Amino acid sequence: MVDRPDFLSSGDPARLIPVIADSRREQRVTSVFLSTFAAIPSFCGSLMNSLGQRLGQRSVVDTFTEVVFADASASNDRPDGLIRITTGGRTWYALVEAKIGKVVLDPEQVKRYAQLAKDYKIDAIITISNQFAARPDHSPVNIPKTLLKNVQLFHWSWKYILTEAMLQQSQGLVADVDQAFILREFIRFISHDSVGVTGFTQMPPEWRDLNELLKSGGVARKSGP
Image 1 (cartoon, rainbow, N blue to C red):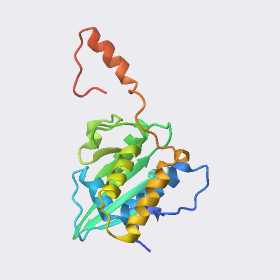
Image 2: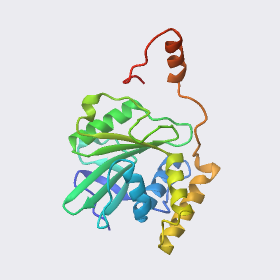
Image 3: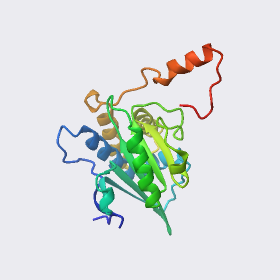
């Protein structure tokens, strides 16, 4: 049994085949992804490289779902997951908040998680949804920069994760037979319509405002939404 971090009062290792009610689709998809992420080093390494984090040959990756912090004041905030990567004497942590289908990320929720990360010296927050981002460091949500002083905020779309998995498969980067089987099943699972993974279908709400601003001769600020 994997020991969870001391700052958590509960949190289970991510399961490849989670026993979760049908109504909790979000938790199921997150568990399957985090389990696959931890089980396949090349897949994990590719995704971590997109965050500027190098996965060493001796790195140990642990993933947890539905984590609850030990501090009673934070008990109502339950991120969908936690990633722990240990390399030698260094440990890197990231909270994971995921949405599926048409549900979008809640800036207020991400703000609270950023404060938790700051309080517990967690290195990063990774959000996952069907919302598009040009790069992992371009988040679909805006939160105060003061909360990100020692915490990094990243975003993966589900399509981005699926694309990385398909590239791993098509390029033959997973040599281990068992890992290759897990990757094929993950791709099959996440590609199914019932899961709720969709691609980029329309511009975000800010697009109309941006067009109006430019038409009227305004200037788009680099820090704008």
